[in-house]
Length: 190
Image (cartoon, rainbow, N blue to C red; front, top):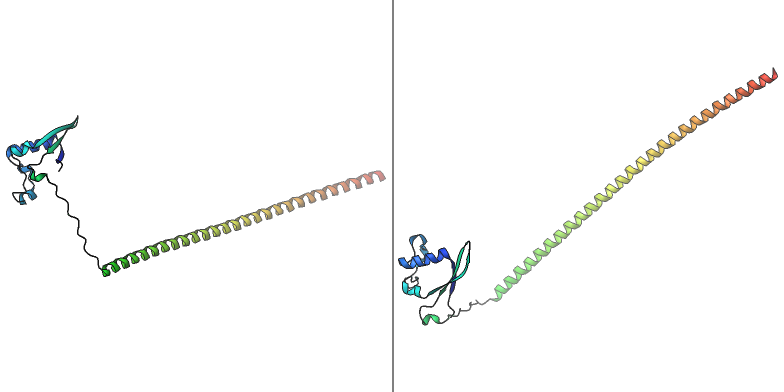
């Protein structure tokens, strides 16, 4: 059996030495569960027990020191190792196996239903989004078409107004030219 090793900081080691001098743990550090133990299970803090303890300094830092406390076995009888007993498996019955399989099948079905529900929700959401995008696109096209038609009508009206104004000007010029010709002819005849 390997010797148990315990690592403590300075304050814990001081507590161990103080407890050994007093003959047991002080009142401040009393473990109430330890009081319930039988006398054979209690820790022996006598000086004989502390002779079996070796203390090695691990490292020294500005924050404190660390020690390794090596506890050696108290007797040669304690040297043997106690193997851990294997866990006893209780026999599983056919009904229990069927119940577990049914529960697993139920969990699988519920998980599958959740996945299908989630996929259906995603599909519905994507349909709604595409429908909304299609409607917005149609609305945009209609508004653009209406605006374009209004602009074209306004341009046609402006163009026809400009053409009417030009025709009116040309008619006035023709009238003036006609008057000038008549006046010239009248002057020539006079």
